[in-house]
Image (cartoon, rainbow, N blue to C red):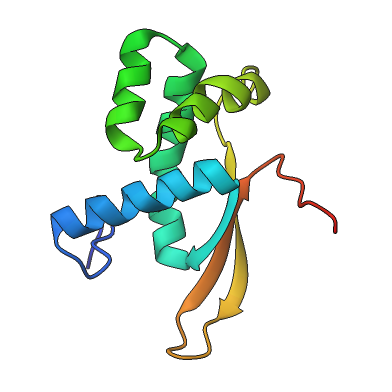
Length: 123
């Protein structure tokens, strides 16, 4: 049994898992909606919600903490600018996970993770 195990290993070693979550977090902040596997989305949710909470504080120390995790300076400025303004009155729960079926090649469960107020751009 894996009761109270703590986190998902995602079939990777710790450095690879951390780099993958950093890439996913940076992409999610920039794009505001990404599609990935369900376990990755569930693990990513806690990471990005903590980063958005850092952005709501807005101090220099919190900005440096977020910059040490995200790969892109534009993502950091987006967290501390538009995202902090959008979620300033919300006490958590900034993301939603939508299940999208299975991947054709290997049958992995897919999910879309997005911010709760995400509006897709109409073409």
